[in-house]
Image (cartoon, rainbow, N blue to C red; front, side, top):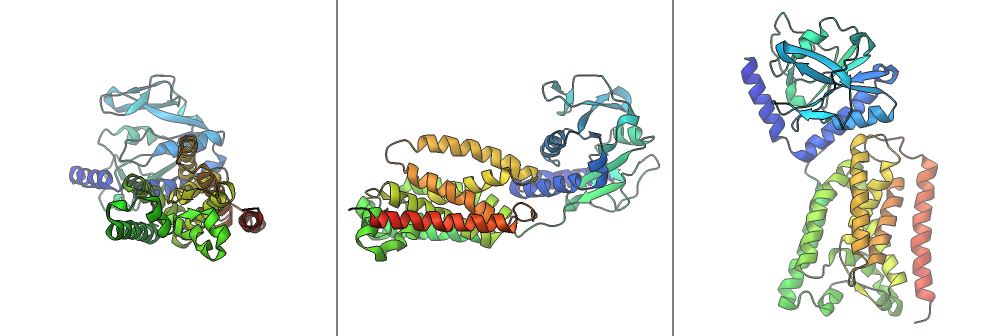
Length: 399
């Protein structure tokens, strides 16, 4: 029975959608960081996870940031295991495909306050099914500290433990999973694709010409300055693209980072973030480059980058922190590329600024303390003053 359970659950772990796994790992990491047992612990032990397992890198990074001493397992023949200090520069890959420390300087069991225990299946009493080596059952037999495991919903099953099995004291299960249909991301993809197809069907191979993108709502500051009623171009330009390559690249980016942002902010907040970032990006185009005909979702996409990067410094969520670090690299790279002729640096920069302000304005799922009400109000005022101020100045300069 145990062998069948192992195969079934490992298969489910490997088939899990990446973005679902990332969200679950982020929530489970938060669960690990909250209990008093972790808060009071000086030394915590965890494991170096396989790709299909709960990603312990998030937990390790935060534990180190919290000043904890972090240990990872070192295994030996005959099922013996110890814990040694974690050093990412002193690891080796075992025959089982698991990273382990080279050091054999074991830490006394009595010095460990909390052990984060891996496993494949768990029952409601905390008994676990591992990979069959028995390492943890032997080690935990006389361990006096706290033990905890983090699992996905399908890892909780009913089975009869063996006499030698040692239960963990607490099992943290990720049950709350948000709607994975991503309605706003799907809607934005649908609208933008519809506009692109309309341009092609109505204009044929001239769909990418300056005249066509202008007629379909591209941004042009001089037009708005001459005809204020066309202020709607601040919004419409978000959904217009200049050629197939421009469209495809932006839609691929929106598909991936849009779903991540919708997970973090929720659907409605993400919609406002997307539109407000795009609008401010186009306000920057209006103010700084009024003679340019500009279009594209990249103003909004840079807004997503700016929002997640801003959140990185405001929340303890390791997933958001890791994502923010990745987005920071992407933002810098793309801003450098924006110096290339034909790419709107002003639009990208304005979108990033808009996204950063929206990150403060709109709450984040599961992070009520990210920003106080006063900070949110100030960010909203800053957005309105910046947008309206630049529009007013652009309208009132000489033509």
